[in-house]
Image 1 (cartoon, one colour):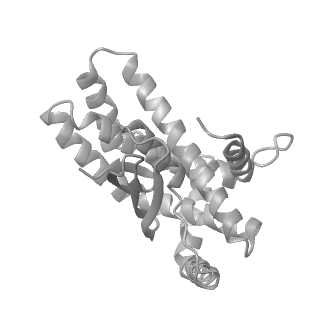
Image 2: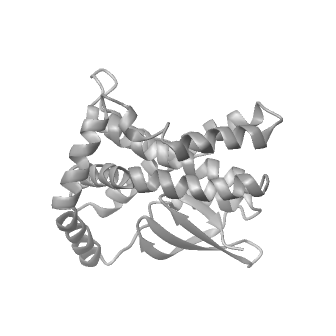
Length: 239
């Protein structure tokens, strides 16, 4: 359960994505959420299904590889669009920007996890459902281009990411160096995962902050440690 302070941050994050409730949703905001959410759903399907049997394990790997080959540049473009908007809102307030980014990442991951786990809980035949969903991802049924309204926006974001992404990253890196602080966008996700694995109230420290790849170390109250690796906000305990 998110604290009240974090609920405020998530609300701010969603406002950034969707705009004011009284105003029409921005196509850019919708496109960003659509791309990040679809990617997160695929990663959860692959993670949940790979342990069902040997066929779902192979298909989980194949679906991730082939879907990302076709759609990865658009996910990166959506992430560029989100990063740009966050920096426009937060300016040189790095803590504010980090909190908004963490709120968005947490919300995207939680929404994807809720949907995937909800569908799995409704059937007793996980193998059949996994094969059905993963085949659709693998064959292109869930490709981002299928949304006629949002796909042109994603194409524009992808082109802008290619032409302006390096400059934006340099600006972000310069701010981090100036402030002498580093943040991880998956922090809230890591805290939730640590709690699930029997480490409530653990002290979370980021070891590698290189979005979309992040590594966290969590010291538990019993003085034990767990290592958590994240990719695009999807985090797993390192066994």
